[in-house]
Amino acid sequence: MIQTPFEFATTAAQVLEGVDLSGKTMIVTGGNGGVGKEVVRALAAAGAHVTLTARNPETAAPVVDELRAAAPAGRIDVAQMDLSDMASVRRFVDQWSGPVDALVNNAGIMALPSIERTAEGREMQFATNFLGHFVLTCGLYDALKQAKGRVVSVASTGSLYGPVLWDDPDFRFARYDPLLAYAQSKTACILLSVAITQRWKDSGITSNAVHPGAIATNLQRHTGGLQTPEIWRKTAEQGAATSVLLAGSPLLDGVSGRYFEDCNEAPVVTARPDGRVAGVAPYALDPVNADRLWDMAEAMVGGAA
Picture 1 (tube, rainbow, N blue to C red):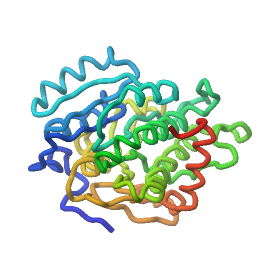
Picture 2: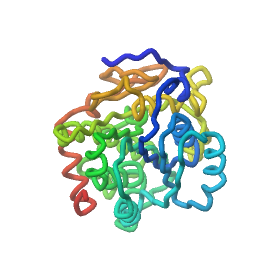
Picture 3: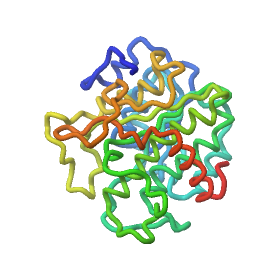
Picture 4: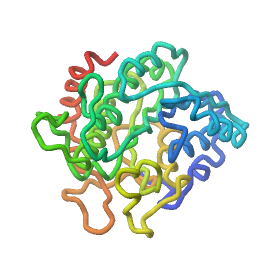
C-alpha cells in the first residue's frame, strides 16, 4: 500500500510545494471548471505547460485568463475537445505534437436523469467518462512513451455502486438507471489504469486512478446537489490534491495500476461500506476485467488509435 505524507485535507498546492515541473507538458481534460480547474492551477503554478481541453474554448476563455494570471510560472493553453464525440477526440490527437509528461483524464458527467446516446449510439456517461478518454489515451501513446509519461484516470466512489455491464453497457435491454450508468463508467476508468499497466509495461508509461473526494461542483447538477454529509466534503483545492499527486509528484515515480483517495492508496473492500463510502471494489482492479474492457472498448470505437 502506497502511503504519502499527505491526507484528506491536503491541498493541491501543498502536494507540489517544492516540486519544479518546468519543462513538463501536461494535458487536463475538463480543466476549465470544478476540480479540473484547480488541477490546472497547481500544475501550472509549479511550472508545467498545461493544455486544458473544453467542449467550448470560447466559454472557457475567462477561466483560462484567470488561471494564467494566477500561475505565471507555467504556461496554459486551451484546446477544443468533446469526449462524447470520438471524431472530436481524434482531431485533438491528430493536432498534438511533442511529448506528454502527464495526461489527466478528469472531465466527466454524472447521473443523467434519462438515457442519452452519442451519435454512435453509445450511452452518454460511458462514452464521455470512459470511451472518449480511452481513445484519447491510446491516441497519445507515442507522446506519452516519449516522456515516460503518467496517465491519471479520475474515477469515483461511484464505482462501488456497480461493475461494468459487459453484456449491455449501452442499456439496450436493462432499464436505464442514472447511478448504475455512472458507476460502470467510473469502474471502467479504474480498469483503464490496470489495463495500461499490463499492456504498456515496457513503454515506461505509468497509470493510476483517483477518487478526488466529495466536492460540490457542477457535476451534481442532476442529483440535487452534493448529498455527502458536511464532515466528509472537500474544497476543490483539496479535491485536486490526489490528481496532482499522481500527475506531478516524484513520490509516485514508477507506481502504476493502483487506486488512490485522500492522497494515499485506497484499500480493497468486499462490500460498499456503511457510513463514509470509500475504498475500491475487487472487480475494479481485476486484471482479467481490465483486458476484457480494453478489447470491448476497441470494438466499440472501431480501434484504439
